[in-house]
Length: 302
Image (cartoon, rainbow, N blue to C red; front, side, top):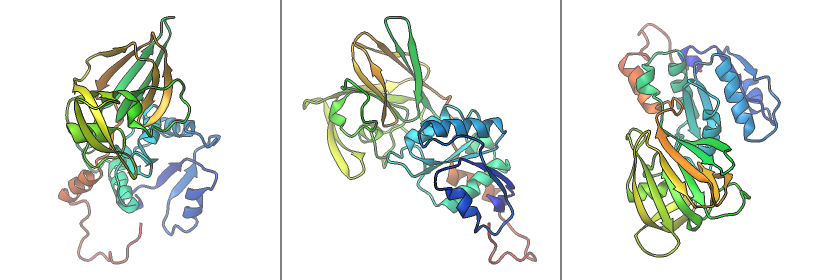
């Protein structure tokens, strides 16, 4: 980031002070400070930190984590572009990439040296609502997948068994991903730039169309899809009479009663997700990395 002109950084504190300790060995010039927040070691910390950097007027945010972490960040980050670096269990949304390269892309975005709408467009998301008979509602989002699971309680958060699925909704299903979105990816791939999403009903009995998919690292399951179709943008999709648990981006979040109605809508209101390689390529085409011949550049550090 420093190589692209970034001079100020805010970071989320943690129990091990990872960033602070790394800065002790940093040889450049950087105004870096921890966010003033109480760190609890729970997923809510990511939302608190995201809201803080958004309120501070950050030009770009870097998120280390998987789909679940990025979902939490998306609830509070506003319009701040996000460089999502894959370090989680399910990583359909973040990118597997070297940290130095991710930092260069973040610096280019922060300094607005590329076109924001081209290199960091708003990604798709699933808007979900659980409407209950008493008139109360619970609203939430997912960036990759939302699943209704046959279970009575939230319990363990991660989803490990595809055989427990009833319904699956996907904002994206890209080949090469691991997690529930791999089911859709191996049946009918849906990319992040495609307008539609995908809905699927899952059966624990043979029938329909069955696909093999990597649900978690090291585990490939055969999943039978009873029916599926495209999820059009901004179209309401209701699921009734399907009690269980609603899982969002691979983690169980909300219990669904027998008379609750789950509504799903696909939208383009997700966070601005930085396309890391496209950002660097765009900057290169603009000559952003060219150094005059007389300037000494060998051994430069960032």
